[in-house]
Amino acid sequence: MTKSAEDALVEQLSQLGALPPNDLLGRVAVDWVSLPATVGRVYVAFSGHGISYLRTADSVHGEETEFLESYRRRFGRPLRPASRPPAGLAPALRTGRAKALTYDLRELSSFERAVLTAIQEIPHGQTRPYSWVAREVGHPGAARAVGSALGRNPVPVLIPCHRVTRADGQPGDYVFGQEAKESLLRAEDVDLDEVRELAAEQVFYLGSDTTNIVCFPTCHNARRISAAHRRGFRDVVEAEEAGYRPCQHCRPESMATA
DNA sequence: ATTCCGGCAGAGC
DNA sequence: TGCTCTGCCGGAA
Image 1 (tube, helix red, strand yellow):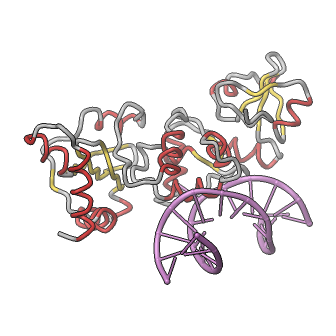
Image 2: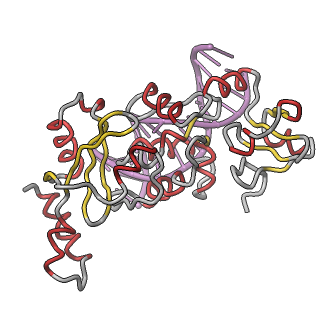
């Protein structure tokens, strides 16, 4: 066992407090399973603390051993095969809706955890810019740092960093590659072609002239705007000058940062 | 469209 | 501590 693995165990044990000893193994040992998902087969590591790691079979070239090695490189400890997956995991992977699961994000910084927590609020089928996430976690201006944090997302697909896209309408980079990001979004019925067409016209927000509310184009409220009442905007300031206010659901950047 | 910087968190030295 | 570099960005030129 490596030094860092020992440290991790000691730290975990110290956090167990008054838990009965017969819970120890279940809390400390980390298991793994292989399951089908919308993106093909995935490998998932988990313990009593929650799901801690996910890789697609594609990303490890279909090799279970490569998954096990990548886990060991990152966490400094081995995995053991599980007899069955944690509750709710299989359906979450089938449907792409995973908000109810619990995750073990203790290895991350508080900023990284805040970012991953915030993006779990992005609904299935919708996207938000990196700069939006930065503002949501109280670090406006840290859009690039958000990208770095998402790049370290230990549980992609389930924690939906693929729903965070670039402000210019491009999908942006992704752990498993831009192609994988695009296919994940298309599987959620995100109309990437329309997003690109709008962006080409310098339209990054959509409003309805019946409600005078402005949204991100993928917001479910924006999807309901009829063609006759739809109006595009370059930015929120332009929309506000036209008498529109930001949607309370998708919260496009307004001037007030509270 | 492309390129070039400024900004920011984290890691390594 | 402080300095430097890197990275799923953004926006200006």
